[in-house]
Amino acid sequence: MAQNDEVKNNVTVSSKGDENIDEVPLYKKKRLIIPLLLLLIAAAIAGYFWYMNMQNFVSTDDAYIGANSVSISSKILGRIVYLGTNEADTVKAGEVLVKLDDADLRAQKSSALAELELAQKNITLAEVNLRRAQDDFSRGEDQYNNGVITKEQYDHLQNAL
Image (cartoon, rainbow, N blue to C red; front, side):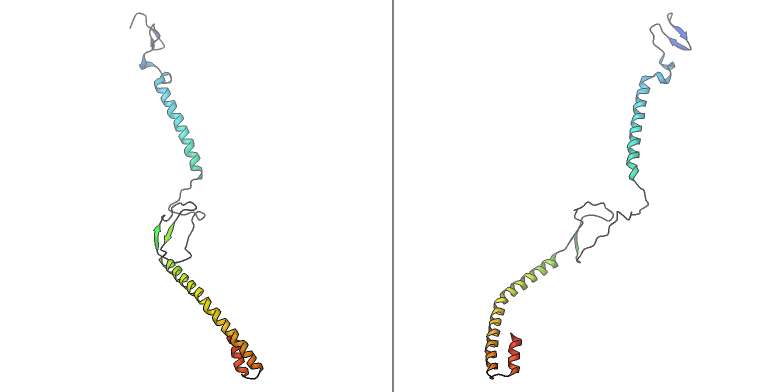
């Protein structure tokens, strides 16, 4: 060794104060300690977040929790033309799950509109028939009171009205 070097406790120290890297204890090596401390801190943070997220997690073997499983059904029968989700999917309020074929409903609507139009046209005919029945009853009432028609004919006119 050099002339200015001294040996103290089996560690070679030069006159400049440098230590031999092979003989420095692990707790004094900054290149090793700092990354290990950062790794330890990162692992602690990751462990904390994992623990906090697992507080509300329950593991099951292909089982459904009854409170979260909901059966749905349609008020009408029909063919499905669009299926927005699969069984056991999580859905949000307002999300479209299924669309049914509405061809039958459109046909029923058209039929109902046609019946409504026909009924509106028949109102005029019904008003004419009502006036005729009122006129016949008025005439029949006078004729019954004068003894021209029988009670049976008068009853028929009253029922017709």
